[in-house]
Amino acid sequence: MLISTTGDHANPSTTDAYEQFERDQHIGNLPGAVDNLRHYFDQRFTQGRQPPRQHALNALAHYYVRAGEIESARQVATEAMDTARTVSDRRTLMNVTSLARRIPTRKQTKGEDDAKSIDDDDAAIIARPKYTTLQVGTSPMDLLFDVRLGLDAGEPVSFLFQKRFEAIGAFDLPPDIQMWPLETQWQIWAIDAQLWRLAGMASVAEIADKNVLANASPKDDIRLFTLCTTARQHFLRGQYAKAFMVLLDRDTWAQLSLTQFGYWSEQIWWLMWDIATRRSQDAFKLQFLEARKPHASPFDVSDKAKKSPEAIRKMILEASEALTARNVTRATILIVDALHHAEVNGYWHLYRSATPIFADLELQRGKIESARKRIEEILPQVARGEDLEQRAMTYAIYAKVKMAKSHDTGRESLSEALVYLKKAEDDYQTLEIYPSVQDMLYLQAVVHETLEEPTLRDLAGKRLREIEEVEEKMRVGSDEEMTEVWDVACEIGVAVARGDTYWP
Image 1: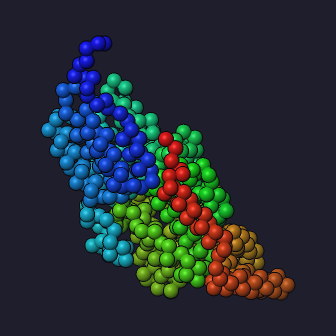
Image 2: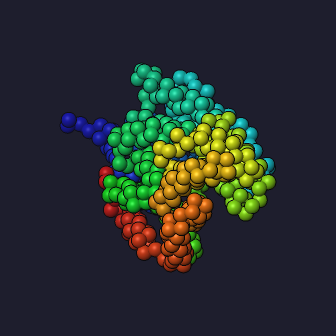
C-alpha cells in the first residue's frame, strides 16, 4: 500500500467515452459518436496488451450501418475483418462478417431503375442468392437475413418458414456452445408475423406481434417496426384514426433515436399518402405531401425477382390500371402472371388480391361460371375483413356475377346482387374510396331499375350525387387534420434532435 507500482500510474479505463458515444448515436451526432467510440477503445483495458482495435472497428461498422453510412460501413467492416484475422479473434470475425453480408452492394441500391416497369425482364430477373448453411456458431441474424433474400428472390413461403425455424435452432443452442442476445428472439417473432401475413393468416400474425410488443425493450428497432406494422394493419381495415393513434402514442416515440425517427416519420408520411390516395385528395398530395416525401432507404434494394411479393403487388396494381383503361390484353397477361407466382409460392394474401381482377376479366369474356368459381374460392377467407379493400372488391365482382346470372335465374340473383353491392358500398365508404362508392351506387340504381323499384333507385341516385360532391371537395381541398399530424411529427423530431428522448 505504501509503495506505488506501475499500475498505479496508468490511466484507468472508464466508460465515460462510451456513454457519450451512446448519446451522440441517439441524437445523430456522427463525428462525435465516431470520436468517442475510438477514444473508448483506445484505452488499455489489461496490462501488457494492445487496445482491442478489432472491437473498435466492429462497433464502428455497426454504427455506420445504423446511421445509413453504407460506404463507410463497408470500408470499416473490411478493415475489421482483416484485423480480426490478424489477431485470431474468431468471434469478432464471425460477427463482422455477418454484418458485412447484410450491407447492400453498390449495384443493389435504388436509383434510376425505380421507374422501370415490372415486366422488364432485365430488371426483374436476378440470380438466386447464396443462403447461409446452418452449423454450430451460425448467427440467427444471418438466417433471418436469408428470409429477406428469399423474399426478394421470390422463394416459396415454405422455404422462408424453413429459414425461420433454422434461426430458432441457432438461437436455442446450449449456453456452453453459443449464447445470443435475448432481443434476437423477438426479431424471430417479428419475422414470423410477416410470413404468416404473407401466407394469408393475419390473425396468427397478430399473436406474434403481441409477443414482440410485450417483451421487446422500448428502444429496440424491432418494437418500432412491429408498431408500424400494426398501424398498417389498421389502415388495411380502414381504421385510420387507430393507425395514427398507434404511431403518435407516447410509448411509441418517447425513446426514439434520430435514426429511428427517420423510419417512424417515413411510415407516417406513407400512411398519409395512402389515405390521401384513397380519398382522391389530389391537391393535398401535390401541394403538401410531395414536397415532404422522404428519401429512399439505402437498404431498399431494386433488384427483386419477378415472382417476389413486391413485384407481384406491382403486377396486380398495373393489371388493375390496365383494366380501368380497357387494355384487356395487358391486364390479362399481368394478372395471370401474378396469380401463377402467388399460388406457386403460397403468397395467399396476394392471391386473394389478384383473384377478383381475374374474375372481372373472365366476366367480361362472358365466362360467368369461371368467374363465380374463382370468387367463391376466396370468399370465406376475405370475409374475415383483414383487408377491407380486398373484401370490397371481391363483393363487388361477386355482385356483378349475380347480375350476369340474372338472365337465367331472374329476380332472385338480382336481389342477391343488391346484398353484395351494399356490403361493398359499406366497405368502400369505410375506406373513403369515393369513386368506388359511386360505382356501387350506380350499379344499385341499375338493379333497382330492373326490379322496377323507382323509389329505391332514386335514393341510390341521390346518394350518388352526394358522394360526387364529397369527392370533388376532397380533390381540391386541403386536409387540416393530417397537416396537424405532420406538425406533431416535426415537433417530435426537434425533441429527438435535442436529446429529449434519450434515456441512459
